[in-house]
Figure 1 (cartoon, rainbow, N blue to C red):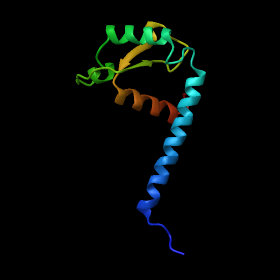
Figure 2: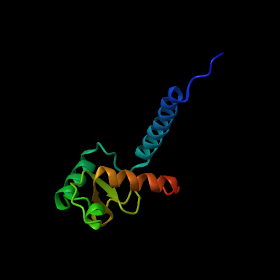
Figure 3: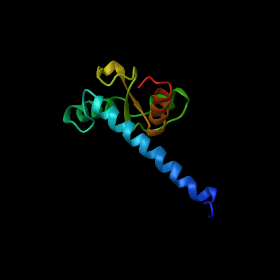
Amino acid sequence: MRLPSLPARLPLLSDRRRAGTASQTFLRQARRALKTNSSEWRRIRAQVLTEEPLCRQCMAEDRITAATDVDHIDEDSHNNERSNLQSLCRSCHSRKTARAMAEGRI
């Protein structure tokens, strides 16, 4: 019996990683106070992005990047106070979320 080569197995590993991420995303969505497709969250999101159109993290690092996501600073999705929301680009938001998940904060 011939064993599959390493490159043939790599897609399986990335598929598993994606599946794990999808289930984690589903669980995080289920715990949110406001679902991301709710009209109230869309209104809040639009307000934050209008008030703060550039990524806060990129600006702190002297880069100009359009914000695409709204992030809960304290990682509590039930705390939708404006002071707890910041605009981030997709890349910065993904890094912040991945770090929080790896550290077990969310």
